[in-house]
Length: 226
Image 1 (cartoon, one colour):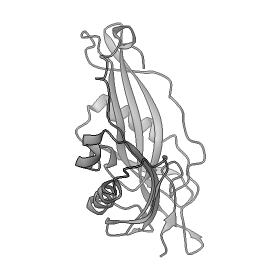
Image 2 (cartoon, rainbow, N blue to C red):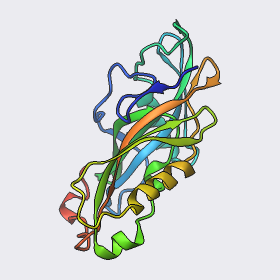
Image 3 (spheres, one colour):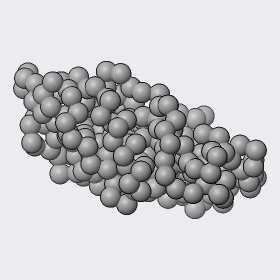
Image 4 (tube, one colour):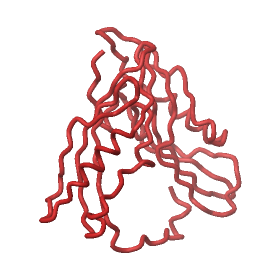
């Protein structure tokens, strides 16, 4: 079947009612250290029936049971538009991503969960494009709009690549080469429709930035607030 066109914020299995931060939910564990814990892009495999209802959730097995339980409860509240294949509603599989914040309150942790999106399983944030050496030496930054296709076998290829910041006099072509190499190295676990993997088109942004100052340490006054 033809790949469907999506962006990072508009998933293949279109979400009807994306959730904001959920109500805080108590979790087990010690919060004696008083440190806020923030996990970004925590992923769950989600099975959706032909009516768009969540019928199965599988989270990362390395997550603490209390956290996995809270995530599953939030995912099961989601409603999807019925997945379509060849003009008919079919069951599907997608991968839902959340940000999870655990804040210490009265000796325990309370959790907040925020929906980020869904699509094929990927690890873009932890695998960044290499910064071109010449551009890094000059302190040159750059920003790009990137569109790429994910094939049913999980490989990725560039569709379009557009520089969005004002190019400087000494524009480094290494930026485009770095993005192309990054995309070609990505591997995804594709979504499924009616039991078969399907392709997806993804749009995102890539920014190369040189930090001129060291990042400040977190403000201790905000460490216990999600």
